[in-house]
Length: 144
Image (cartoon, rainbow, N blue to C red; front, side, top):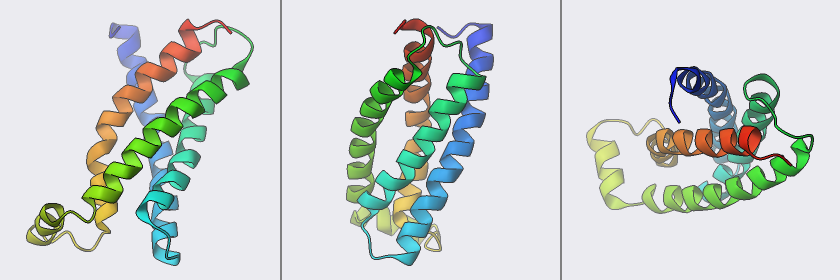
């Protein structure tokens, strides 16, 4: 799957995803900073904004869409993403209050950022690779 052309697409996808992550993190930061919402809800909102941006940008600028029903593919991707976001949100909510994580953040003097953002930052590379594989497969390989 990772030949030279796909490696270039992955790098471009990583750039687009970086923009999506920036949108995501800004929304999460804003929700956590200006409301009493949980890290779970903040991550759900931020991720939905970032995911939508990455999917549509990738669909129209990066991958070759096989088929005409991009909105159907988006709904499939959104469903997949919802499951991923719920899982990641649970992990963030759980580990952002874990005594070991809080101790590490304090030891490394990283308390200037909400613990949920550090956990999200750590999980992001894993979700990047998974999202690339799913988006590429859905957009280019499935003809809907």
